[in-house]
Every structure is written in structure tokens, then in C-alpha cells.
Length: 390
Ligand SMILES: *Cc1c(COP(=O)(O)O)cnc(C)c1O
Image (cartoon, rainbow, N blue to C red; front, side, top):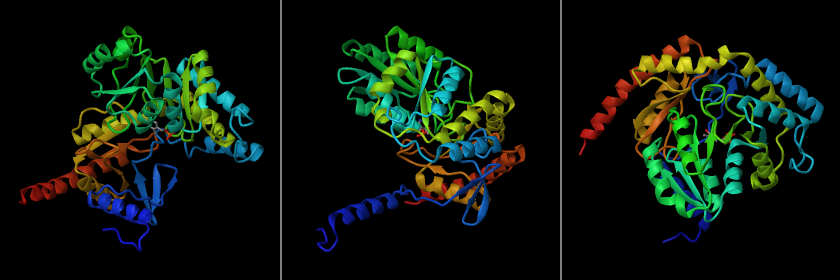
């Protein structure tokens, strides 16, 4: 029975939290101050962070900071309105032109974040009576956009083109339009979509493809381009915001129809200036862009894992509790490597997600590999002893 002295909202929140706590799925915020050189300060200690998506170390680059400071001093802190009203700063125009050129597309559109981009793109292109086919490991915001669209949403097995073909065969006929959602680099697994083959299959069925390049830009450049390429300014570009690159007509349509673009405030000029400066550095310094993948491969070789395909290296643990324990043990040793638990990843696949950056040194990567190997030996005995319990 409910306790009449506890308001129902409180009782609901407390009950849910207790459930999450019991399943090792409660999330907590930890105060963290990031600094140059992949450093992160927590609880008065300086850790080497392997948990940031700042793959090129540009968030703390003096040139990026100076560009943002200059824009801040000249133009103020905020955009002041939607881009369709008064929030369309010339820096956004310059950034879009640069993004489009970088991606070899006619046009680009900058959103408030990558999440907002995905929440707006899919519903602007498909609706009821249409079909969305999404890779099973697609990011939460791709699913959110698909759901909001009202289209029939079907998931295909991760990177499985035979499954995608089977589903297109079965569902494409009764849908007016079809959109395939996938990622160039999968955020929690670090593997890549088979894009040339997937794009050919899409074309065969007259389906459009939206590729989420959040973890590819600046790290894995080569490869086929989809008709719709979206991404974020908040990872390798070290700033904040999201974008989509496409043909002029598609971008113009999104500008008028994507509600998460129309009904929200434009990106602050300083964020646009930072992203623009970072994009220029990314293009001018290919040796920097090559570093995260090279370091990821160094790490997978040392851990005896399959060769890294991106800057993201997962170390599977299985249960959420074990992943949290391993993360905690690494923090004791001076490494920040967060545990990723369901529902971010499928049940039973809790893991450490290690993100490499151009800011890491080889010595830091080697030290992390050594620490992970030692801790995994300890963890395994803990897990197996519990498995033996009745
Ligand atoms: C981070 C991420 C996003 C969201 O980007 P934000 O700019 O952080 O909102 C979208 N898709 C994927 C795959 C991501 O990893």
C-alpha cells in the first residue's frame, strides 16, 4: 500500500531509483574538470581521461579557444533567437559552407546539437505510411527521430546486409518512402558500417540513407558518402552543436521543416567560431587526424583484441556491476574510463568504452593497457567465484 504521507511523485521517483540501484543501473553525475593533454580532474585528483570524445584534443587547443573568445567578445554569449528569426549569425553561414565542402556536399545545416539534428531530420523526411530501417545498434537520438516521425520502424541486425535486404524485400513495397539509419562508426562498439554495399542496396530499393558520422569525422575520413550525412560539432571538433550535409534542396527542406531547427535558438556564435577553427585545423594537420586510430590500434594489439577500426575500443565485461567495479579500479590507478551499461548497450554487454585521442601519448596508452590487463585478471576470478555460488 502507498504511504499517504509521501506524495505519489516522490514515491514513484524513490521506487524507480531503488530499482535502478539494485540493478547497478543508477547513473550519477561526477564533477569533472577537463584540461589539456587528455587530463581530467576529479575529487582533487588528476586522471588521464580515456572517456572523452574530444578525439583530436581540440577542445583545449589555444587556436580554438582564441577563436571562441574573439567571437564571444564581439558578439556576446547567445544567439538571441531561432536562426529563422534573428539567430542566423554569419559565423554559422561560414561554418556550414566549410562543413559542406569538407563532406563534398552542396550544402550543410547546423543544429543546436547532434541529438537535435537527428530528432529533426527523420520526421522532416518520412511520416506515417513510410518506412524507417535502423541498424540495431543505432544511437538513441536516431531512434528518437524515427519514433517521432510516425513511420513504421524496423530494426535490422547490426551491420547485417542480408537481414537488411530481407526486410526491404518484405516491407519496402507498401511504404511510399523509405529511410535507412546507420552510423559510420558505431559509438559504443567502434566498428564501422559496410557503407559502399549498404548504399548500393539502398539504391536498389529506392531507399534513402542517413549516416550518423558523430565518431567518424576527423578520425576515419575515407569512404562512401550517403545522401544524408549528419554529425556533431561536439566530438572531434571539440565544440558544441550538430549538423547535416546534403544536397541544396534537401537542406532547404530541412531548414523549413525540421522542428528541432525551426523552434529552437541558434547556436551561440562562440561555439560556431570554435567549430570553424577546429575544422580548419583538422584539415590542415592530417598527422593529428591520423593519431587516434593509430593509438587505438596500439591499444588493441597490446590487449589482444581485434584491430581497432576507429578511436573507440570496447572492453566487454558483461554485467553492469562488473563494469562499474573495473572502471572504479582503473580510476584508483589514475585512469578515467567510464563503464557503459544498459540501456545504452544491450543487456549483458556492459563494458568499458575506451576513447583514444590525439592528445594521448604512447606511454599513456601502454600504461592503460597494462592496468586493464592486470585488473581483468582480478575481475575474472571475482566473477568466476560468484558464478560458483549456488
Ligand atoms: C554523441 C552522438 C550524437 C549526439 O551528438 P550531440 O552533439 O552530443 O548531441 C549523435 N549520434 C551519435 C552516434 C553520437 O555518438
